[in-house]
Image (cartoon, rainbow, N blue to C red; front, side, top):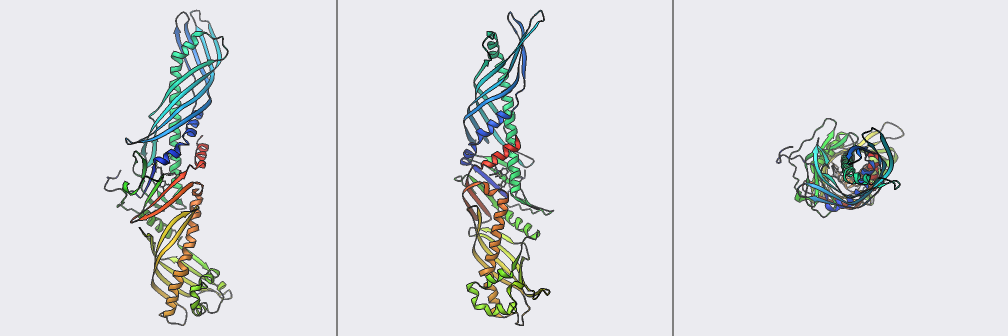
Length: 479
Ligand SMILES: CCc1cc(Oc2ccnc(N(Cc3cccc(OC(F)(F)C(F)F)c3)C[C@@H](O)C(F)(F)F)n2)ccc1Cl
């Protein structure tokens, strides 16, 4: 990884202990899936017994029959592991036990009977978060089972006593080994699928068409006593553009530990997304004549009706159309007051009378700087305009009036701040909300999300209820 001084972290995700406890409610489901999905290979062997000569035996067609899990605990260890303890897994297995004497006279007497094995097990999985190819990898190799009970029940009751003995002191040893290796292998497989699933969902979450965010890891995941966190590059993925920044100012102290989930974003990330939106020609807005009428007829613009009539040269609104677009990529800076977006914007008003070619009657450019406060209420993104500054730039007008007409300038200033900017914001809000909902955000039970802006970065902190669909999706996909 890059040396500590040159860290490339654009996004940090922190999951605290309370979040792990909520996710832990699903551990039982995942462990049950592991036991059920594991395959139990046949066990065979032979043992020379006193007086009986060699006895061969085999446990075949071992299936899990019944399974229950009492509870599980999760704990973050400073040494860097997530210790999951699952108490009192009671599992019963069924299968066929066949055994025979291969005595001196080579007569193979073989019997096979159905058996059932009752077990009660404690499971410990000390998961480490590793990093491989820039992705979080869950290493669950430190996985062990403690058997509190392992009893064999044989079909019928006319079985030789020595068989029980053989099972107790030998077969059970092999069985424990097989169960441990199969269950832990299955858990490792599920852990890997779960972390792949999360990364893929996360990458998809931060992707829209050709625009994406590289969430590969910028450094190893960190596990402390009360949280675990991942550091992601957050670099822009857009065609062959690469936006590099190297002065990320993340520090663990920037995030607290009271909420379940934290996402820290450097303003570089927002800036590069704004650049991509500009390059992808998304920062263009058409305003129809009808919408213009509403904007022009707002109470504050009453006084300018004369000018409005002149601009529209008496044609009706329907035949007019305004086009608003960014001339340069918006510059986004994050401050405690909010998200400050500075962009030079062009506005072109055209009129087409009686189906003739539209003619541009008005064109002007403005340097617009807005301060936006963002919130997420009732599964909708809300952008609140806290402040706006409008600096005139170019100006062209087809009217006979000279361009320096004071009242026209004043009118434009007014119409932009009273109606223009709110109109643009009222289009961006639903667009972003529907983008996030298309990624399934509205399916998450998010509680009291807070979006906090500070100098140079943004923090989203929230609590959540477990998104059941996520686990069901995951298990359906995986098993
Ligand atoms: C969408 C959230 C997000 C995930 C990122 O990528 C990863 C990759 C691997 N693990 C994580 N973790 C964070 C996280 C938190 C909550 C949900 C989540 O998954 C998902 F909701 F996105 C997906 F399931 F849909 C991922 C976990 C990592 O922080 C930890 F905790 F393991 F260290 N994030 C990077 C940025 C962003 Cl904004």
